[in-house]
Length: 327
Image (tube, rainbow, N blue to C red; front, side, top):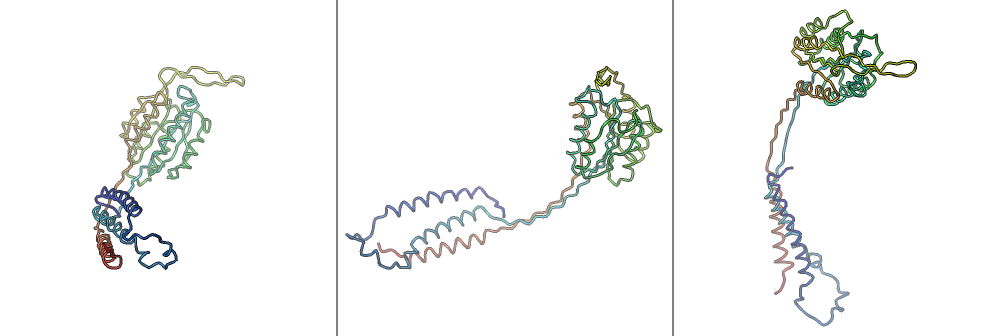
């Protein structure tokens, strides 16, 4: 039940001082007939009228309360809602070559990418999302799934060294496309993150982009890494030393891949920039939500009005018949 004018219910607070006034009035009321001693009436049986003494006041309070509720216009509501959620199928293609251990992003490129990818997944509960890893080769670490708890476990378990080293960008795209090509979703997306230049694989990046385009799949490409040189950990005799390695990202090819598939290319030179990139992609690829809502309201004041009328009538009957006072 809802109220069309719910603010009228605040008038119920006015009943509190009325109750206080009634109690104080009864306490200070003078007797109509004064006698010297009332002890003789102590053992006298009580009339049923003694038990009805405060009933008129209670009925008046009930009447006032019902009138206030009627003024607030109580209504019953009968609503029906139907939501249609159209998710997006997304494959995350992540570079796990050893260059992803460079520490220009903190703690390194791969860990930063994993953290931001996990946030991205958590923000899209209605989407099918999977993971493809690539280095010198490519494989599917997790197929498309809506079980994001399992997906997040795979993301956190991603590390360098799982496959032969290298950067097979074309194979990474092709593997992701193979997982999306049979999808019935209206929107299919690959988000590819890499820090290098394609140097391995049997499929070139641009050929893979053409394949993605033929299946209506958009590819968003992300080049991760600072400008210039980046510190890279290099094990030497049981210790780790850092050498500065030149950052070489084939931005031209990554931009061509995105352009061919009607996606976008982004450059992430820091943790904050990488997060901004995923937030931008999140805005571009929104899940469609269609809601149909029907609502019908009917006035429900009649019952309260009848209670007010009957309680008022009963109060008058008691006050001027059984509980009538002699002036």
